[in-house]
Length: 594
Image (cartoon, one colour):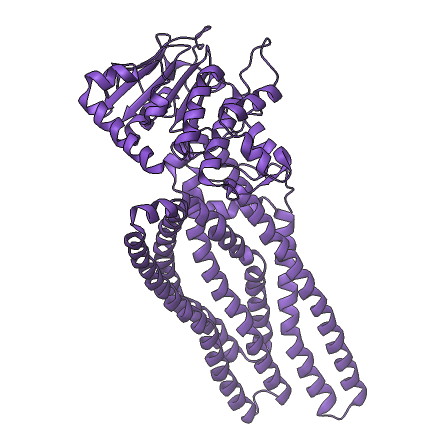
């Protein structure tokens, strides 16, 4: 199977069928071995009634004990060998499926890393989770066709040849009857693809809804909206359940016909063979062999139907994977160098101008407005932003990522020790959301004269008032942190995210709501320490907290995404009624916390 560190190869993204064929071509030897083992196994299943017919006609009927013993021994040997073949076939096909499973996982995860910050903008969380949880397994299971599927065809042809030697009439009935059964099931497989596709789409939406509810449950409880969202989720889940019933109805018919029609056909052929035996056209041994041959054919036909069922589901899943693989990361067409020295960041669309080496705040009634400005300033969306008078989009993306860091207050926190979670910024790892992923995150932006990374981490912990988090954990910085830091409180998670961003020590730090989940006392400490920690470095925060705004050099007040006023916090309180009302609401909230 594919090694954990092996290159999975370049997938064929031209369609679902081509992707499945690519998975087969990635392991041709193993797939060929599975097909050969399955073919020999099924052909030897058909050899059993042949040997039994010989034992009856040449040993039992004439009373030849030696012949009966010889054919019985041959029957035992063939059966034992076939049992071993069955084990090897199953083992080989398991490896085929596991290779396809792991290869698809590596391809999807690798592409998610390449997408970086573009991922949440191009695909929903539910889509990615559904691919990882369900589609990968469905795709790997569909590769059963390269083993039992090929074996079923070979066994069918072998039995047809054997039946011709017994009775051309019976052979003709079998040769025409079995394909008829497959044709009858075909339309159901087409319908299954449609219902399965719709089911998968709704499943992805509902999975995303689950993730959103889990992340915002505490907020929903506080706002009294838990019941409303619970009712909406209940309705969505009921629709998904009804769609699942529709998929199950089609599946049950496919499986029932796959087993029932061959069994019914077996009865018809047995009746026909019995009439021929009664008329003396075939011997009793040949009658037994015909019954055995047709009974053996039930397996291959059932395999055909099962393979068609698995392929129908596999193609649906493969199309979802291909659609995800076709997503492109943020285009990097920049060729110009970033400014050699700290320079002004200017967003003409909003009017925001960020002076180098200063603390700047963006305040707006709608957090989405300020977040969009940060996205443009950090080059996570196409824009007309300039840096030092040069369009940001024309600069090499690697240089932008090396010097500008966007710190989202909801950025992902990966499992590991607290030291790794924080120190990951030094190695170029940041959370998703508006922050870059490991693919396009910057390296540590420090100058030779600056302090080492350990000193940055210690200072960052102090600046973010996170020393108590380290002290409260049993092993300090060596303590294990769960994925998304679920073993920490909301305020602790936000401080750890801020520590991670400060530890990276970027030239330009763009922080989205870095203190929104903190209590007033902690927020005041963070705000007062941020100035000293970022002295001489450009820092932009989005906030409406007066505790933070009062420490800023410049505040941009935005209305409908445009700068309505600029000044210090106190100047804006005196001159802008809208700003005063916005901050007053925040003040009321903080007094309620106290």
